[in-house]
Image 1 (cartoon, rainbow, N blue to C red):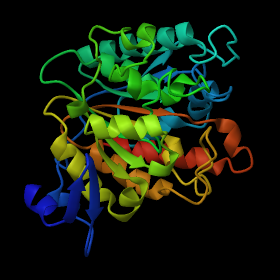
Image 2 (image 1 turned 180 degrees about the vertical axis):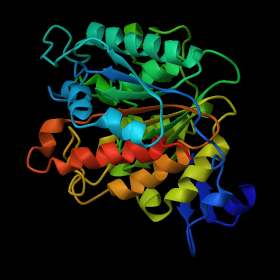
Image 3 (image 1 turned 60 degrees about the vertical axis):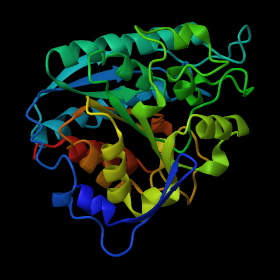
Image 4 (image 1 turned 90 degrees about the vertical axis):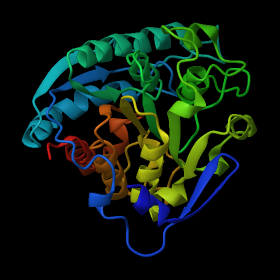
Length: 336
């Protein structure tokens, strides 16, 4: 693995990785995790919440994906699937009493419910698939890993999610999740301290992939630089997905591996799935994301995949997009 990565022409500066890959993609036989057989059972957990979102919609995703055959697709991919049901159903409402951290108690309730469900599955030696909901679910997933060595998180998102109620006025906690996981200044204490440890994560335990720097706030860019966060851009992910995965897996710690996807990382024109519709004609295709998840989720450290920000209504005129994301999840989690 190391020789393959070293053969990539790269530049690393200012806490971010700029990858320039010349020639063919790395062969999968040279990447970590290809020997993983995924012999564990797979527990499916729904997190039907849009409480921390910009508007209702994402709370429907767990139900809709099940109705469209998610469990059957996972079983056809060779997994022994156990459906653990859903956490609390929460629908976004305007919170005029706390407008800069809307529906904070409901968000805490939802992520803690995810944490308990994931912990139960991990303790039973199962892998986990969490369907959100919005990106705050990733905090619940990471809270379930309490042992040593510490767990690592590959965070696939167009945004850093490093905002706080003090750095932005829109009040949507779903693009503040990583700020609370890292316990940045200005984070809402109720969420940042909702787990057994604070901070929930340190910079050494997370790698951001698919970032659009132009979509970051000034505060996010400042925090990413000060914390020396490791990240790659959306362009890097499109150009050299296998190299990005190898780089991330090499950097992340030796403990359990969790992977989180915000579907707004995708080109919305290719896959109209996300609550956020800003990513039109930019970002990786669903085919590229499938390759990324297939590589990352077959790493021997892998234990949990969470996916957030799917709003089924976005695919009303193209329902095949929902079937394609189901196929992506089945490929990522298939027995090899």
